[in-house]
Length: 139
Length: 139
Length: 139
Image 1: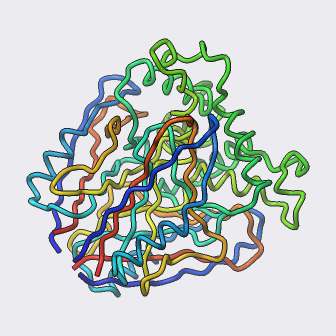
Image 2 (image 1 turned 120 degrees about the vertical axis):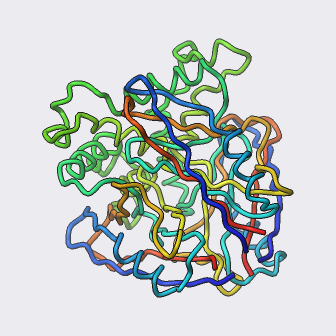
Image 3 (image 1 turned 60 degrees about the vertical axis):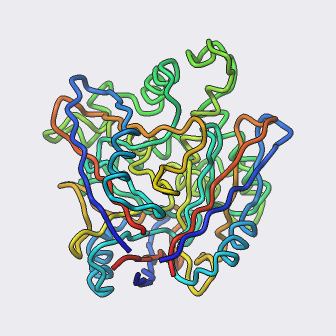
């Protein structure tokens, strides 16, 4: 069994924003030389998500509106967490809905995806350096 | 390390519906010959979920009502994604809540489950052919 | 490839409650002797979650209030599942939001975490014995 590790770094210039990281993950899989196995991709910060869905800007806007409905940012005072130094309680909740991680099969050296699957990093508390982990195991 | 790959295909005859796939996943584990490892089961379409919960029809009706409350199908016009060819934005959101994938331990050739754990495939945009991936790694 | 299996047992003395299990998971990783690999940690009961977020009591209170808003316990009669022997339908829904499992990378014998990542077990139907599974594979 072999393993490979790589970090991706982000600095989103808005409070919230998402980035398609599919190519970066495939690149890591290729670098690893692993042909059959699993790749774990996870946010290393607790107000960010890694998730799999479609590249479609309308859908991404729908996610934004929907997450704001289920876990609204304002008013900040509604959250006990915001009594501390951070004002990002909504980001912890939004990340919970979108998920921390994706586990993806590697088959013949390639991400084993259905037609529309793409991997995204979604930051809910941007304007700072944040990172995600790619860990690959297999043979 | 060995690996094994299998797809499951579905054609749900309603917009939404769920199928118990526990036996199919155990069958794949048995076919693989792998005794100790992990199995990843994921939807390969982005409006479907694989999740673990109980076989109980009352609970499944509760899921249906609850998901419709958190991510309502109608009116279709509330979603930007529905301005395109598809009318399934709610399916993308419902799948986000239920999750894309389950990772399950294999111990002594068997799905290592608590008493009530069962694996389900849940389609939120049915009436078409869709698939899920089973990828097993271990020894 | 090596594998290691361990169960953690819980008996939460309230209907809902959470426990930080980060040290217990790291201990299992150390016991396994595995230096590079993946660890799966999952609830073995279907009204409990394993999730990764911050140790911060204000945030934990926010989770409690938020989950009760998205999937309220009362009135029990609103759920078909509660017509049976159990009155825990809300627990099945809350666990769906928080997730069943976490998959974590192991690098150099250590949980490969960002600064604030901690693993929690969250019970939504306590006052009984429940368990979680730790399964480690790697080398």
